[in-house]
Length: 496
Image (tube, rainbow, N blue to C red; front, side, top):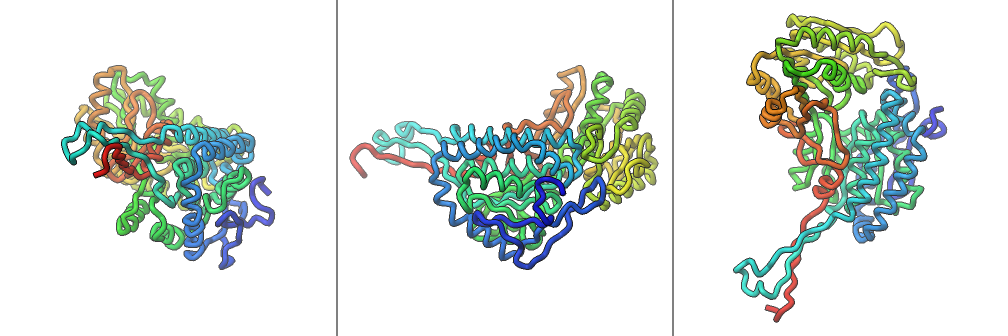
């Protein structure tokens, strides 16, 4: 039995500070994508249990909002310390549940530790501002008034996490919400429930009051909808597909609830003719193949200037063939499995469509011969990919590198902006003037010059434009989204 998975292999719900089995007795298998073997069983909550979790959070809302900031910070730092001490167990859980190579899983734990520490520090900066009342002619009497704003907690926050970063991206929702004084109901992915419940165990151990953090697992159509539509939830923060995010936004909007949505992307990686290929090719491989491409900011389209496209394509194909594909828990693995067999089927469909449109497969393009029993797909490089190929339009979320060639900068801009998405982008060039010109014209939440698309600073603003997202994550920015601005006026003269 993997450490961190409960004895007997059955997970539990965490509601109001207590662990409980699902009332309906329903569980779903949690499968190790490296082996296809069952790790344990995730509880399936009912809509009533989702509502009970919100009720528990709502009961704790006023008490937690009134908890002094230094006490909230102390608890967040204590959780960070426990995560650091539990680093290896957490990393092995992540690797086992979602197939992330163990080396990368350890980095994810380290980043989550930093997220809780950043959140604790940002409590000191979660303030308002003052205004010179006498600068305003009306209303009368401003000479005797003092005006300032404060930030109040918004209320119960629903945190819906994805499978690909089951600890860090869930923490990006939980940490700022708790830091800002909001109770949380977390709904982690059913693919990785044990990572989330072990996080809850750490919060329980440091003395987080009952109801301030609740964890329920179950389908979006029942549990997720119940959380979004409950009258006491005030903000939903979500990472996942654009289709699901739009549904959440629609339901939340009907009840005037705020949302932070981090959704899909077709992040372009633009290579200009003067870019140094000895730097660009390794960066492109990291941007495409890290965690088998199952990253929202992965480099999903390679836009390469025609004059260097042949050399770039050959070098990238050589790099792809050299990557070691293997089980997530093996230290030498560079590319692990996809999350499930359905994801592998999707890779085959995308490559078949590209081939039918006369794209050339330079590397991969099939399930690898090595590992057996898991959901593996070989790192794949496709050249001469037409713009209407599915892999150039639909987010692959897998280890596929489609190369689209261009001749003029105008074409690069047009292709980069041709999808409904706008999460991140990369531009490689020695000519920073051309790089800045491209960065200004590419519609994305972030553009990196001479760095790959999958960079993220946990404390800085992160999010997309168009159908890639609404609102911003990043500790200070998420905390601002999770609070309400209140204007307070003080009349220190003769009351009017």
